[in-house]
Length: 552
Image 1: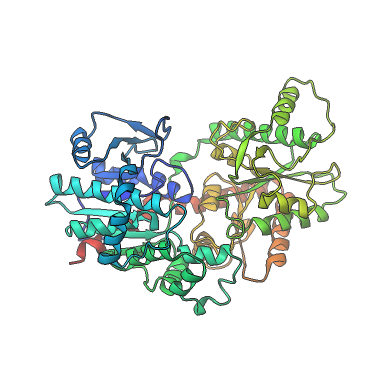
Image 2: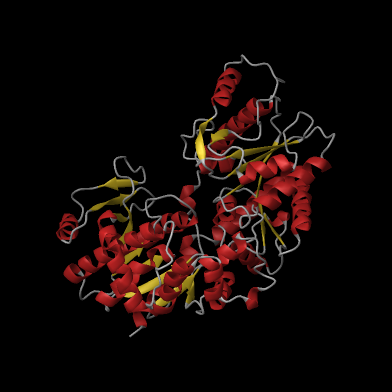
């Protein structure tokens, strides 16, 4: 911490992903919680949505005795909260707000937002209402608590993404002494341009955020995001790459850049790591064998990609093109590759035929090779089996997992929470099994999946269109190669096939590497995770706190 740096007494931090695992923001907050808790204790308070009505939230441990007065204060104002601890390292205080009662006031709240802040909610649709009512309730809760208990304290309220912006704006109006930080992890317009197959980079300086919001029917989300960025005491984003995007599309440069770190407490120690890797590899190979009817050797190369279901932005299209090219390169080879695409889809449930075969394999009752199952490219059933975009491209590229195919591609369309019915492993346990991970992103403001990969000692491939990839290049002073543990490939609007070919080159380098070379790659990969620990990156948050508190 810098000398004379101004720090708050109380930090409220709010996001839709507090105690609610959806995407990368969950990892940002949950992995950072322990580091902040060590400094602020129980004056670090996370606020999230109470969306687990009627069922237990495994990520939240309610404590009826913790801040009992806060709960009663909120109830007197007409809404319920549950208070307890987030089940992550550090066990920080977490408040889950029941925001359903605010829907009756929605039109009035939106009218005030327009009159007071210029937020246009007229074209709202989809998840806008739900997110905004949660945000409003979160801000209202902070207002109640600050006015009653922390009026003379230095208070920071940090809101993540457009889903938390509305409540921050109202809180700032009602409690001017509270200093606000707004963090965008990706602009809604940048993501939308990319997801709609437009050329984001080639025409970057010609894009106008307001104009594109109207064209892409994103006015409401863009409006709240832009006004939050302009009106917060401190506006932050997660990489210099995204800061450039904010300047262009929101008309506001970040005051402070907050790179995402990781907490190595999530990584098992040596003996436990080896056990998890062994068990996960066995389960993955068993499942691949059950689907394809082929006995896969222990030295099968296991590779994967993963992330939110964002087909173009995450580069799943390029990944599958690379698998096609790799299959063609390895035609006639004795080597085998199992390629997993771990992406939550419209899940129906585990495949019964796969479960039965796995039981038979474990009991030694199934002789391999055997006939492959129908659609041996997917581990679970989907509601939209014939329309899923990833599965359709797998079929279009002819990746049918035939017995003479050296590359077996398998879509794993579920959240890996340890209870999916097929693998029954958590995501991080699956990650230990990998020899290599691949994230050929087209639009990736930071990129938590490659950071998680190197934390788990797994070399990875990413691109220079990700914040993490650019950070790796900055650390090295050059483009990262697979020998460095992270290969950073050049990617632009038009080099789709070239990028896929470069992925294949790197996979073949890993396949041909000696044990010593692989060990060196793993050690090199883990060094990046050491550099990206929160203890090294938390200083940027303190800088943001100081910046906000200095604002008059």
